[in-house]
Length: 338
Image 1 (tube, rainbow, N blue to C red):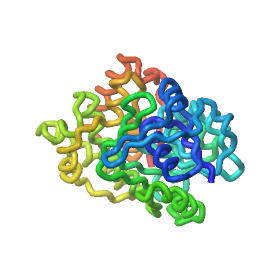
Image 2: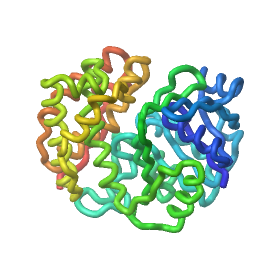
Image 3: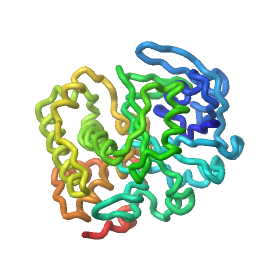
Image 4: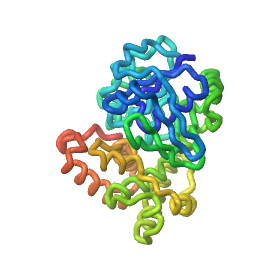
């Protein structure tokens, strides 16, 4: 199976390095200094119990790679629609695309049950370039439990004691293609697994991102800093409770258990991916992790006062820094009330 990692930054670089190290035929699409370093010196992975460098085919032009048997996209939500044409160059007639992404994925309501079933998410796919252009039928979800950072061009540092990657079909089935993908990737990633409840898995991760990311970006706090500060811990709990209520309104029951992640965070001196982007002057995953949850909450008449307040502050900060490109007058279409 030929596998392409589309957008090989921190998470994508982790996946590419371990897949290549495990003997999988993998290529990557990357850019800038990171790409140049990988082409010149290889891709280096540094973890708690591993430090190795692999040589992989790397390019900034997806068309050079041609159609693949599997594409794993790690492009962040805000950049995905603009990347649709490049991603399409990697697709054959049956090529599935695994979207390893934080937050609510653009395909979330495809083959979903319950309220808002079948609705697009215009904030994440404003012209339907992903749904219609790439094809929603190709999509599989992927939840990433792995803390990674590009610490230098061509170098990915993994800060997790354990790493989990959970892949699932939008229709929640144990499909043949899901089984095939997991089997191939498990050759190099023994911590990968298939799920028949991918939306619940998404929400379990999203509640942590939703609770930690705005606090980290507004205070520049690492995970351990949030866990150590009583006021930030309280805000973390409030955000998690609000997120759990939105999930419940969609028929997804997830525990608003803030104490378990807060306990883990006490020893995790990691910057959230959104804070990494802020500090590097890159656009942040505000829409995918936060604003789309607010859209869904408003469509379902679920109050989210803490999220509303912190999101307004974060958007203002991001706009002033030129990191939130959506103009005030160009808000996306609303998700209709049900």
